[in-house]
Image (cartoon, rainbow, N blue to C red):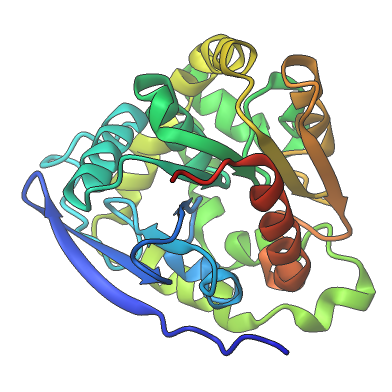
Length: 297
């Protein structure tokens, strides 16, 4: 008998004076799965996953500062770096009293979540990575070319090509690229229109350029992330859209080098795998966490 879908709550908490919006579902006493979204979306990307797991986990999905329905102070008022977003995320978990949790990381959520894990390894019980990269092998050459050019030297000339990434067409490309024809009609246009509307708000140009310009700081931490994997042997599940041209499948397979017991599933979809494969990903997560994460007395 299928369990009834659990309600999803939309809540806010103030961290460092900034209102953080988050989605929450599941029993308060259940094991926690902290869901960290990527660019250019928000906790909205987890809308189909959360109800499928909320009968057995407590799921919490915040919108990063500058994204979704969280506060978006101007780039002059807030330091839009990955170090700062990770620090806010740590304080967010502490504000909610979360001392142990599994991480679900995707795109930007990967360096944010892995910085959290570096700072507090004892709090992270497991990692689910869905196109959340930690290896140079995972960088798609063509997709990253304009970003790497801007990181190497930020000028008006190098900024201009990067701006297209957050336009409606640029965002739609991220959703559609690599999705086979048989799954295309599972993609909801609401997703990229939702993201594009939020990315078009005043101030987003400077916010997103600052974050993209800071992405090189994540590359510098790749060796530390990999050492964290080797040292802790944290249980890791990769559920990866194999058609993704931003973070290519080599990034998923690279985890085996540091985590021989990692579980890697390449799915026939793209960068936003939940848009087409939420039921399958929910099954894989439930099985993985049940087997690999001990339940505390």
